[in-house]
Length: 141
Length: 395
Image 1 (cartoon, each protein chain N blue to C red):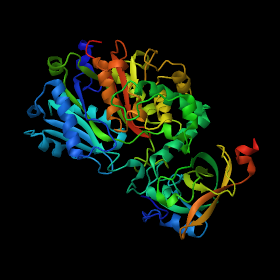
Image 2: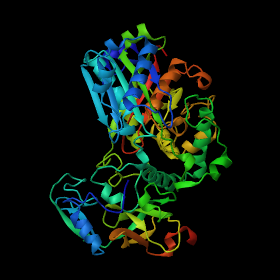
Image 3: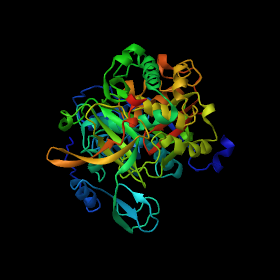
Image 4: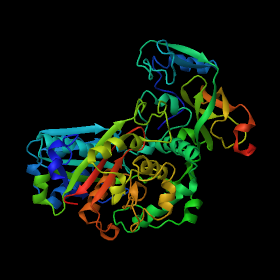
């Protein structure tokens, strides 16, 4: 059973989660090749270098894919359905999962621009995204 | 292909064969232990081949979330005197074809002579994959925001596939409807009924684009096959099924655990796309040579990605292939003739593989593809996975 608590926070991910609690998005950048990566593991998935640094980014990005959950598969999320999780291609590189934060249900489209925004649930801040414009929804087509 | 056998690349290809399959009944509540399921399925495979347990010297198996029993335990329970080869893989549904590949390598190299490959689990009444938390470094990025289980991960792949290829929910429906036709003829299937297009569209969403009918059904049960040398196989079976092609790949960025998609570059393509060149080259055959295909389908869309990855259809063309009827029993390339994991049940692809063997042995009953001699089988639906090209001896 899973919950909202990111229980597996580790030395590689601490900067990211610290950022989330401040409303900021912190990813990782390779000092050797410049690759911007997420998740922020201790080696570069592009070149294999172990010389990386945390990097605060704008949190702008585009929707790459998404899933709208209608039936919660973990009890902790039963009160939240339906909800949409988006996969966001960050400006500068790296992909991140986040909750799509919209007051009304919308159907995303691929390539829609979003910006990072955290949300509060179950006593903690978590990563989410909000559409930068209504043009990112199917209702605008 | 006999004259080429000394020069095969990889060298183990064409040297080992599957001689038999063994199943337990697939149920929602077995009422017994996983060890008992494993020994029953393995015992049934031995009985079908007429091989004594004492002749077994290798066992290969796989698990997920510690949901199975070790090869050592099965050897003990079956009173096997000595194993010289065993492999317990914590790999889930990406493993079945890889397990048989390992068995074939063990046989071809002489490490073992007779190798059982099995999958056993109480997947419905015991450890349910859909509701069990991974202990992995990447779960912190998906669980808290509500990506908690496989249907949701796979929905992300399905959605991007639809975005890139223009595939629609009608294509998913086509898979479900087509495979239900086979399931209706399959006494093993846990969902044994025909599904109409209307019924499909009336089913509720679990996670868009997947409805309940797009998702496999978790089961309790076990399935096994017996691998030995081609020479020995000819003395045991009327129709030995020769392992002519086998490949496993992890695509670049396949993740930090088997459910991690954060580093996977292209959600519209999965492991079959990346292994197929190696698979077909090794086999000396191509997708057009196949008489039947058993394609991993934990969710309907994954069959489409798998079909295209193996080259059985053009990019974006799998839905039309299925809808056209060409994957049905009398079509050009029957696919998922047991009804797939969607209908037969979620034995994590071991049953997908065993169905291919049964087809080539001509024992698939009312689902039998007439004259089936060559079959491709795939295992896995994310960044890493495996596949086999199986050929009935002499076909």
